[in-house]
Length: 226
Length: 125
Image 1 (cartoon, chains in turn purple, brown):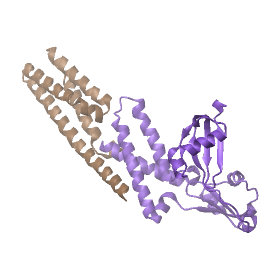
Image 2 (cartoon, rainbow over the protein chains, first blue to last red):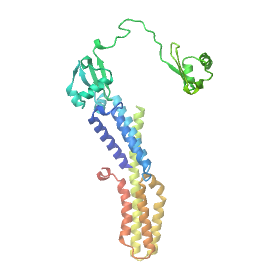
Image 3 (cartoon, rainbow over the protein chains, first blue to last red):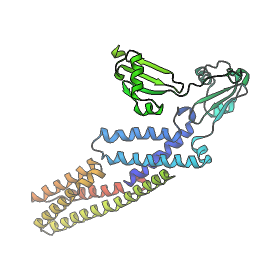
Image 4 (cartoon, one colour):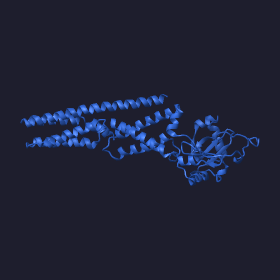
């Protein structure tokens, strides 16, 4: 048991260090410690399931220890920015004022074609239009264009816009979402009236129905019932 | 903060329990090893019946411990000890000369169980 305990801690720290050294590109959308936990748990859990000669405790115990580690590490990261920097690194500026920061590119093991691919993913083809390209600690590349290249907003044009608000789902795959219905201060009577107006007898015939704060309704009839 | 404290407490409890587990496994295997050593001495002194009954008693002790060992230890290791017990018992009952290797095998299997749990650089790495 103590061996499992120490082995789990050692493997966790080793994987954490390895992933940290590998750089942000390996992470995808997970934070470093989350990724390590995900990789470890999925592997550890599989062994006692595959081999009944291994006590289940050998799988369960490391998972509990890993979850505790994750809780402790995430708690430390919330409290200390220095610890967060140490464990997750800092965001890296790969492009500043339209110029590629080659030192940061090398540090993050990013090749020019990979950068170009990331930029194309975000529909940016011209590097000179980019004020900042920031490689975040979770591996995502965020792009900030020069103000002259940013899309014009209604605010800049001083246009008045109406806010239709957040749409609330009232029927989800034939099921009435009663909580959401009361959230928009409507009742089932109102819902039935709206359904009748759309020539639908029962909520079961509805795939999706949502209502926004302006009272606008999105309605999709279930294809099975058409 | 509460969640982190629970996590730290849990991790400390698991570690403490694992240390208790080491002591428990060591004391149980030491007790069983002593029984086997005593049975060996009895057999050498010509008291085969007492040796057989002591090994049987030790085997019963071992089997009564099985629920714990099956939860905490690798089943293959547990089976090796059980096999070594039955092998020694059958040799004692056959009234032939019991080779020293039969005692040694059982004692080594018992020792390897506690050695597996003990914290050493070798067992960790």
